[in-house]
Image 1 (cartoon, rainbow, N blue to C red):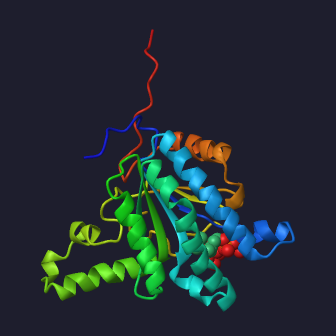
Image 2 (cartoon, helix red, strand yellow):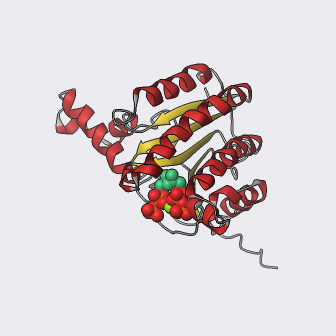
Length: 245
Ligand code: IPE
Ligand code: IPE
Ligand code: MG
């Protein structure tokens, strides 16, 4: 069972499209890979910062179904960066109480990478401070299709396929839907991240490039979230009417 939320103004689940690594590197006259490498270090700090602020789930977009379209060199650089990141940070994250989960199609990645993911999940499965979901070779459309395929494979009737069933078969079935969806890097789009799960997420877009996303930026995003009025299709809470004298 999950712990009670410290406060209703703190999101239980934050989703992040970590964008802007390439531009961050270019500004420094460095290769794009330099930005991706810096991005990993920032992610490790961000997990702890979000956990300290009471966030239970942090889900980050690390590699999209569409990122295969990038130059081969960048794709293979990203693949090997994951292996480096796991060997560099797994022990630390495990010690910090972080549970790691991977969301995405594992079929297309190498055996080595698959084994690294499995090792990260196994080593941290009993941790409860925060769950870090790394979406890798993930696409929101892929997620919906794989849940539909599960329904077909299990021989469900059309009546048996409903929102609750599909939600239970999505990659992030263990997490509540994201409350806050952050995208760094200035673009205002979802780029096929958690399409189904973000139906009622609050969106926060910032120009800040991912490698610059520090505790101050996190606090700004959480403060913006705390000011939002979430209605889920209902009407706004009645304003307090001053008593007539
Ligand atoms: C996001 O940074 C990381 C990945 C997609 C892997 P980008 O690589 O998209 O950086 P920009 O958007 O080109 O600056
Ligand atoms: C989204 O960023 C994917 C990740 C951050 C992993 P992209 O940089 O790939 O998105 P687009 O191409 O700008 O939409
Ligand atoms: Mg980008």
